[in-house]
View 1 (tube, rainbow over the protein chains, first blue to last red):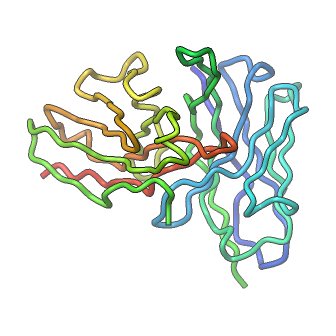
View 2 (view 1 turned 60 degrees about the vertical axis):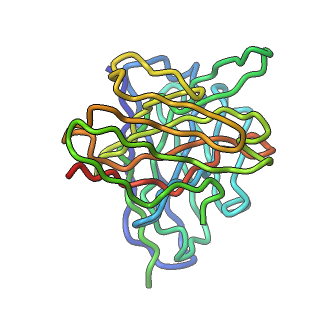
Length: 126
Length: 110
C-alpha cells in the first residue's frame, strides 16, 4: 500500500531553520514528481514546492522562494524540505504529496495529487 | 484569501444531496484548466475525490460527482452519510501551472 509519512516538524524561533522529511513506500518513488503543500491552522491549502522524479526540476511558490529548498534521495525513497529564515506566517502543517499526470483531449498534460501524507506541524514562534 | 472561492460551510441531513461550489476567474478555471477535488477528515491526509472535473478514482463511491462550467466547478454529494463529514477542497492551476486551492468547505451532516 502506497504511503507518505512526513517528519521533522516542531517549534522553531523566527529566523531559524528546519528540515522536513517525507518517507515513502509502496510505489516506485524514483518515477514520481513530489510536492510539498502546507496548511495553516484553520486555513486552506497552499502549494509550496515541487521536485521532478530525477530532481532536475524544482519550482517554488513566491512566498518561499530563496528561503526553502526541496531535494530528494531516490536511494532512500525520501523527499526533503529545507526551510531557512523561517517566519511566523510559515506556521502550518506541511504535507508531501505525489503528483499524477494525465492528458486532456488536446494532448496537454496536467496533474493532480493522488496520494498525500498526514503532514507534520511546523510552528514558528519566539 | 484563496483565489478559488468556496463556501466556508454547507450542511445536510443523512440521505440528502449537497453541492459545493468552487469559483475562479478567467486566469484559472475560466482559462479551461481542470478542477480536482479532495476530501480531508480533520487530522488525516487529504484524499483525492474527483480529478479532471468529473472523474472518480477507483474506490470513491458514485455518490460523489463533479462538474465544471465557465469559471466555476461543483462537487455534488448525494445520499449523504455521516462518514462524509469532512473538509472539501477544490484545486486548479494558475497561469504558471502552479497549484491553486480553494479555501475549503466544511460539510456537516446533521
